[in-house]
Amino acid sequence: MRTRSRRRALLVGAVAGLAALPAPRIARAQGGAAASWPEDRVTIVTSLPAGSSVDITVRAMSESLARRWGKPVVVDNRGGANGVLACEMVARARPDGLTLLATSAMTHAANPSLYERLPYDPIRDFAAVTRYLNAAFVVMAHKGLGTPTLDAFVARLRREPGRHNFGWGSVPSRVATELLRMLAGFDAVHVGYRGNQAGFPDLLNGRISFMTVDVVGAKPLIDRGAVDALALTQAERHPALPGVPTSAEAGMPDYLFTTWSGIYAPAGAPPEIVAKIHADIVTATGSPEVRARLDALGGLREPPSTPAEFAAFTAAEIESWGRIIRRAGIRLD
Image (cartoon, rainbow, N blue to C red; front, side, top):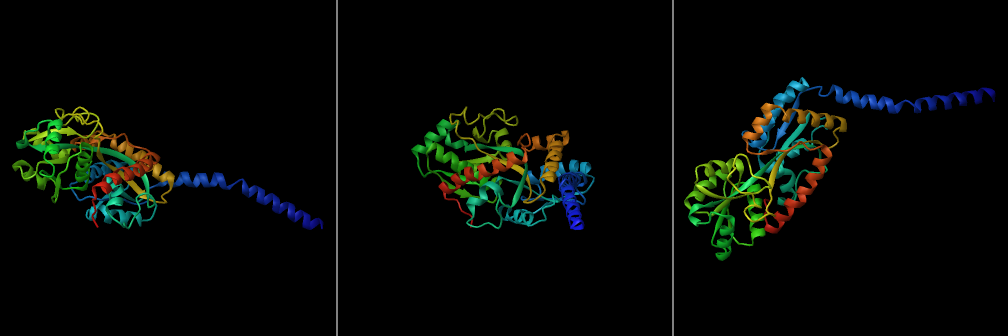
């Protein structure tokens, strides 16, 4: 009896001693994982082709990140299918932070409403890291319309329903224009092109009446006075186009629309590694060379959002873009 009681006391004491150990050991293990990460090269998969804004900015960041991490950072362009291929690849990757997705609003805000079925879920299959860039649009009208202001333009299209065409060469361009049409209350026929620039000749010769294009694409036409720049779809004027009024200045304060770029990891990536990647991207985007690249693209540098902020923003954008896409009846499948 005495021996059995002694054994029981020793067992209870041992269990009590073990219970005190896991928390600090786990904490040290987690801290160590972030401290030693990355153990191998990091691959950043982009949802857009080489030369796109996402590709250019990620390549600028990758040089800074490689120096900081002491490992190669490889940029893998997987453009095509509106970014579906890139998203599917990263969603299926090991959640160790060594494979990341650099993408835009196309894949994580528009696609859920454009396709009946997607091979990925933009919320469930990804861990948001950070959003770092916003890009506004400019409404450009053919000069022959004789509508140098947004008010005059809207008045004419309301008087002539269905007689005017608008061009688009990207889904964000189409969505931005559909939002304008809904807010202003006019009808126009959409004409699709293989890229926004492919529609510029028709805009200049009057085959289409207007386009809504990102700042980078619009700037050359505006700078040479080839079109009437009616409004910028953000709250403040853009430094690259200081003469273009904001939508509020043009008389339509509710017409605010931007696309954006951000980084995601596969769902299940350890939070401490996501936090490290976020912190290092914040440092990289704050460097002079990366800031210069972002400014040259015509986007507005966004103070990098936290992972939690970006996750909430993504969910809100899915709803916001989805309302416009569904009302306009845009489908890609």
